[in-house]
Structures are given as structure tokens and as C-alpha cells.
Length: 167
Image (cartoon, rainbow, N blue to C red; front, side):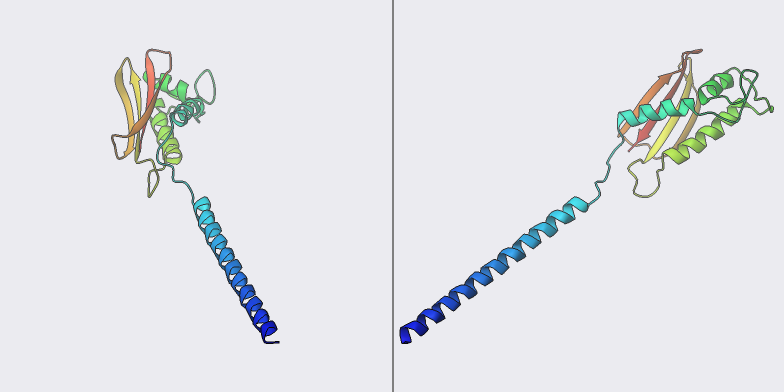
């Protein structure tokens, strides 16, 4: 009987050790899952802007219509407004096309390229060049050594639009 009691006591200690080991494995797996979950839920911080974003922005910008019209149409696109501004044209309501262009571009740039706080974009610059001479510049924020830019040729009177985003 003494031997039987020793065997029962030995088996119960062995069972307790198994339960403790199983509990430790559960805790270890839970910690690993929590660490993995913390890394996967973290939002990746975008460090810079890509070239295709700049090209797409310029393309969309030039197609944007304004409330300025002329004898051809009631709503000029920014592309047409840039050309008309260079030729000294006025809108149907006698507003200067260059003033309408500048205010429209400033508003679009302000909305599209926010540079406040912890945003990756530190500044931007939009230049309109005519015959390789800078005609208009809209700039905001800081100029840094890291940047992406794209130039779009309008094809009329050697006019180009150059946009640079600094990050």
C-alpha cells in the first residue's frame, strides 16, 4: 500500500508539471501574438512622394476647369488659362487671366499639398516658364535637398509647368 501511495503521489506531481508547462506555452504564444499584432497595426509612415504622384498631379492640375471664360468657352482649363495669361487675355467678366490663374493655382496647391505638422511634404514650388524664363512662381514651405519634380510642356509658345515637392 505504501508503494501504491508513492506511485499516486508521483503521478500527481507529474501531472502538475505538465499543467505548468502547458500554461507557460500558452503565455509565450500570447506574448508573441501581441508583439506581432502591435507591429502589424502600426501605420506605415510615408517618407517621401513618388514621381508618378507628381506627374499625375500636374496632369490633373492642367485639366482643372476654372470660372474664367473667353470667346471660345465659358470655362477655361488651367492649361488654356496659362496660355491666355501669357498673351495678356482677359476673362469674359473682364478679370485678368493671370490673377485668376494665380488664385486658382494657390487654392489647388493649398488643398493638394498640405505641409503642416508631421506630414512628409515640407514644401512645394510651382513655376510657369515661357521661353525658358520664369514667368510665375508659387512657393510654400521649406526648400530641402530631397525633392521630386516633373515638367510638363504645354506645346504653345514654349510654355512649361514645373512642379517640385520637397520632403
